[in-house]
Length: 179
Image (cartoon, rainbow, N blue to C red; front, side):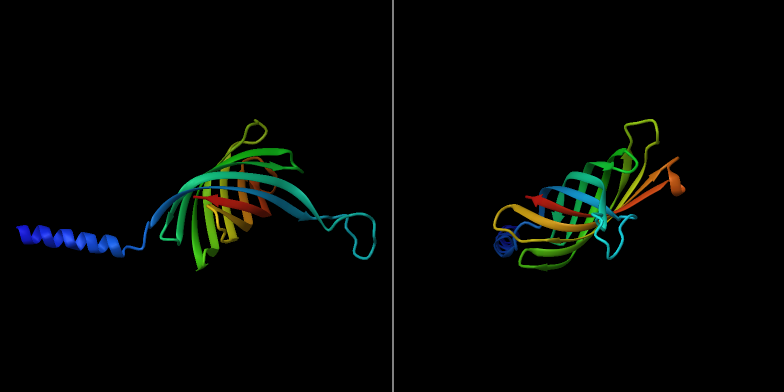
């Protein structure tokens, strides 16, 4: 019995000494995205003061989650969306799963999928479903803050809204992850 306990003790010390470190780490995240659309009044070749792209919405997101083995991240998020043309306020809450396709010295190229519920503060439209698809790049930094650039596709199902009850937007954003 003493030999088994001694062997188990030596094995656990050896495994602890050769372990690669923490495989699961918590983090918080936040982002700011701006959605754009092509300006219908823009004319090519004429300088009439119209810009090609105009902003149509802003999105703020905050979340908390866990990173598993520097490859897979799972988080719970909440945010605020405002769409200018429709004067729509929305509060999405969703779960996001992120996969780092490529890691190199702290930099990461990733894809992310989020799905959840969208809450509406007014009675003009009802609550709906929320979907998010993200492609992004996370940059290495010497601190615990990791900045990111991301391209996001947002899809909101709103009963009673025009065009099948779907509000879709493509946005460009900056984000951070702190751990």
